[in-house]
Image (cartoon, rainbow, N blue to C red; front, side, top):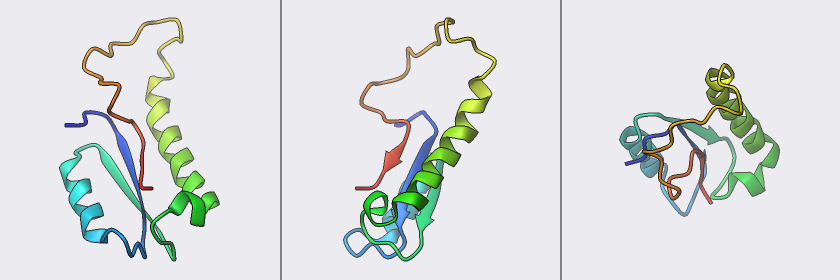
Length: 92
């Protein structure tokens, strides 16, 4: 199970993978945020790069501000973080 905040970025008109899977994934990831890109198919970061980037930047801004009080030299506890679990999920 992914234990980190995640962004699920999905093309509203994805003809390859149904939007139903986006909603299911969103339900199964408790800290996920689902953003659908309008008039976009399977690859939002290619078809609508500005909108995709906007969603990614908003997600990062919202989810890194709570760590601003931790100085960069302080070690963070990453004992439960697996390198295979991305913090940002982009549907490709």
